[in-house]
Length: 281
Image 1 (cartoon, one colour):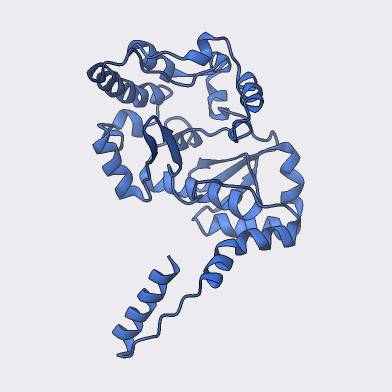
Image 2 (cartoon, rainbow, N blue to C red):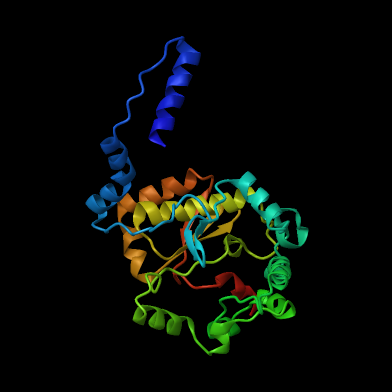
């Protein structure tokens, strides 16, 4: 990456001045540049850096997944690639007004595309079922995607076993799985109030904002709820004192305003899964 940046700088110099530039990228310098954010964070706040494993915080989805015949990666680094990925998978969500208009049944339309295509693939491959990761806790919230799963004949083994999210974490820890304490994640579309239009650009802003808060400030569990020009931050209550530090507060505000948010607020109720569903109660 740093070599490419050096080459681009040389090309720009050639175009603007007629002179080139020697490209000399040291491996040590590159490694320090990669680690500088974590070093600065630890030095200033005392917060240890958070491991990211095989993931890159600025690209979603980007992670190494295990399969029966090895490892694979699915990555969509920008809006154009995401649109192409949806097309390859047969998920035209970017063009589906039922998704973009963000009704309370949004997940039903999204999962409807997904489970129907997966069911067809499973049938062609001679597989008995498509499975997904719903747990007992999901029965207590608004989950229209589960209706789409049922209609497609998908099964939820964890739910069938009457396991809660905490049960899954406990069992994962007993099995020494590295993901036992992985922070809960949810579709970025869940950051928008119902009936607020979802666009690729707005999803990108939310993604960048949450990556910033995780990377620069070590917040593991964070949601940036997108209210047009206002970012409403949901973090763990135990992390609230971090944002009361004047320097940290200033940097958070500056970082989010750089992403075109006019107002930056903190939700005093803290992080809670599915908070946008509270208006449906």
